[in-house]
Amino acid sequence: MKVIAMMTPKGGVGKTTTATTIAYVLGKEMGARVLLVDADPQGDASNTYGINNERGLTNLLENHITAGGRYSTRDVIRKTRYPNIDVVPADGYLTCTAFNLSNISGTEQIFRFKTAIEEVRKDYDYCICDCGRLLDTVVLNILVVADLVVSPIKAGGFEVSAVENLSMQIADIRVFNRNIEAKLLLNMARNTLAFRGMEAWVKEKSGLDYFDTKIKQSTVIEQAALKQMPLPEYDGKADVTVSYRKVVEEIIREGVR
Image (cartoon, rainbow, N blue to C red; front, side, top):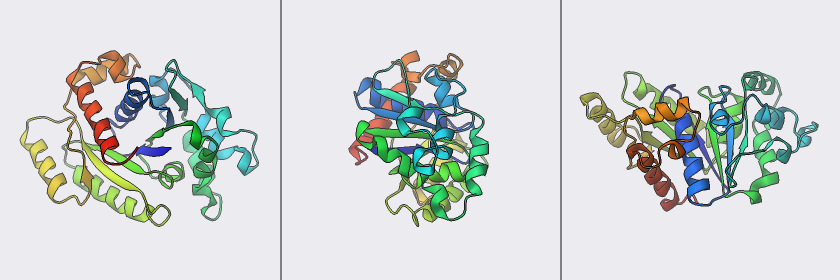
């Protein structure tokens, strides 16, 4: 099983849409076995797949049987209406989970997800994780087991510093996970001077790898979110959906398979 984490220090850049769409393309369209882990307290990835207000990841991290609790990993996994896509849901209590884990001494606090996920590693081909914006103990739990971090970014005044912070964070994580890689995904692409400048900076100065495919700005994304539907199900022929399929093809082609 390959673990792919969606992470960005900035809000409003399409992180959750990227996670839920990649999960859909891999699972529904390509037939891979996918576990979608909602690691964002907002729970939007869970909602997209019809699962609301459940403390799945909280129970996995705080009350797993390997930590003296009563839940196995399979206990917190929820089925969706798509046979190949399962979800570990989240809700707002995940913020408290991050605080509770931070009070545990030593490094055991950041390896709970890695320990728990071993139980189902052979059950899935991909684990797609939608991380929260803060680099808290919940997100650290994801990153220490991640093979690839996908970080959507858009043109904006603070994006450069956000990418620089991400680069430093990945370097720090390599102390615990030597194999982690990160790739930037240019999102909300427009034919503007600001976007072209951001694209040039990403390619020439960011120091991080990037996807060749860009995701264009589209109202279809907002419409799908309002319906709480995966983007490809809402409009499978939209240009933005086609672009996400190309992103998945890049992921597979470049070795995360």
